[in-house]
Image (cartoon, rainbow, N blue to C red; front, top):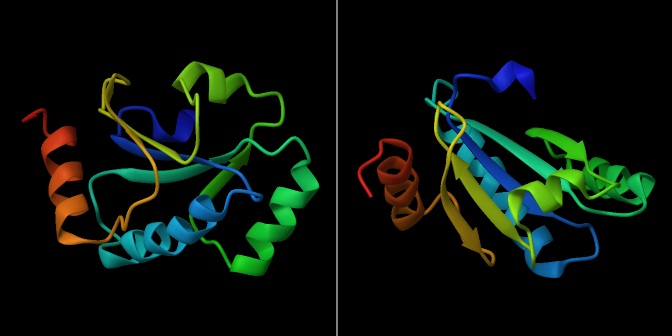
Length: 123
């Protein structure tokens, strides 16, 4: 995660058994491909207890964004993921500026506006 230091992040917490999580993954991929020079990073964090199951699903889905397996739930607890999917927007200083529970279309105009406002400190 140190490679993202100093850069705003969109962190998506998910699990392979979570249908809404799996459904929103495609929109995160589209978001990542919209603008390769975007000013924020996108990462996924799987909360699967079985890391192999999460990796199988990632391979099957052809995921290209950076993904991490949090089988010990350390990041899940740190991010406050009381339910999933959870997307956390973090500014360049590492402060959580927004927590969004539930699936959404991350490449939609409304979501792009939310990301822009939250990561620019205009909320």
